[in-house]
Structures are given as C-alpha cells and as structure tokens.
Image (cartoon, rainbow, N blue to C red):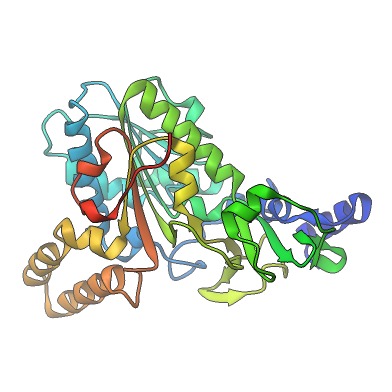
Length: 351
C-alpha cells in the first residue's frame, strides 16, 4: 500500500465508505502524493498522449478557429485567451504560432492550471504567460477559451440502478468498490432511465465549471471550445485508469495512474446556458482543412516525416482512432455559425 492509499484507507476507517468523487480528487490532486501535482504525465515517458502531442496540426487548426471566433466576437482589442488543463503547453504554443500573423490578435494569455509540476513545464515552454487556479481569477474581459482533455479528469459520482432505486458507488475498506443504500431520485431517473443495472455518472465540477464559463461569456462576450472523449449523453461505467499507456485498476496504487471518465457534453452545454454546436473531432478537423495541411506538411518534409504526418492525420481523424471517440463542443453567442460544424449537428440547450 503506497502513502496515498494509506491516507485514503485511514479516512475510510474513520468516516466509512468514501464517495468516488472524493477518491478521485485525492488520487489526482493530493498536494503531496496526488497524480497531477507530482509529475508530467504526458508523452512516451508518461502515461498518456493528447492530440497536441500527436501533431502540430491539431493546435494550428484550433488556433485559427479561435482567431475566427475572436473576429466574429467583434475583434476586441483587449481580451483573454485562456486554456484549462494545458498540459505541457503544447496546444497553447501551437495556437500562438498559428495566430501570430492574425492582425490585432494580441491576447492576455492565461493558463488554468493547479499542478506546480506542470506549471514549471509550461513556463519553460511558453515564457511570460499568466496562471490561474480557476475561471474566477481571470480578468473581466472578453474571453476566448479552449480546453482539450480537461473535463474528463474532473471527479465524478457514479450511481447504479437496482430494483429498489439507485445506489451510489463508494470506495470501501481495502479500496474496494461497494454500493451504498438504495434511494429514490427522480432527477437520476429522468437523466439515465430506470432500467435495472443502468450505471449513471454525474460530474458536478464539470457542470459547475461550464456554468461559470457560460456566465463569463454572457457578461463579457467571446467563445469557448472544449474537446474531449465522451458523447452528448451516456450511461455505463466509464471510469478508467492509465499507467504507462496501459489500462490499470483505478483502485490500485492511487496517485500513480491517471483517472478519467467519459464527458457528457449535453449537461455541460445546459449548465453553460449558451447556444452550442457539437460534432466529432474527426469531422471538425476535416472541415477546418486538416487533410490539406497534412498534405502540405508531408510534401515539405523528408520521407520519414511524411509517414509520421500520415499516421498523425489518421490517429486524429479516423473513426476507429480518435475521430469518433473525441467530440467537440463550441459555446457562446454565434457558436452555431462558426467553422467546423454542420447545421444538422447543432444543439441549443434550454436556457
């Protein structure tokens, strides 16, 4: 049992079985032993790889989309460009390079990051930018916002439907999953149905963040873009752990593996209270011109680089790779008219 497992075990012994969101928060964010405060988790030497680490094409196209969103918002002279969960800073570096020649696009750059280890990596990569722990710390200015694989790491609660109602999934003695007492909940019934065996997941931190983002967009203008794996709505047990790029037991060695769950974009859009546009990552990138960009990069490079570009293009867009698993949600006034989306895929949350 590692040090964090012992801390969790003592809390369970003192207070009884622990909610899953509490367990995830400790495993991912404990200041001394948590996963994110203590390491750089990305790349071949880490536990997982994100789209910006796969190819510069992803960040370049996202950057140009953000620049277009800024222009559609009236091209304000003073504005904030913010990224939540910026990892190594690769996405922001590509965004800033791609937008460097966009006239007037001179944002205050803010990174929403709580990990000291990752802040150090970001500083080395990006230099003089600003950091915040949350949206509330950003300046009161128009906001152009992006998040890639941010919402999936926020702690979830998980519920299972039985014949007598819902039971919450808890972490008990020995860090073993268990079920709490049955209870009735009309909200869970409406959201997930009542079929016995159904598993529903709720991410209050994600919905709270989306609500704060929506409020800021209403107050100051701008647009938001979120890319993550998941769907508009969903059921099932999606909690997973990755360690050294392989699946691991989420309840074994907490703090040593990345814990994530699939994102439900519908509740995020509803919480934001903003007009939204929604599609798959593959369609989004293809509509923004990733194939033409890949062809240009392949033509300009050596033969081995061309093969890498082709492989990256496939990984980012192919339905059997990241293309369908990952989704893209745009939020803000006029989001449904922005590039990368089709009118038949638009979703407007009830406000």
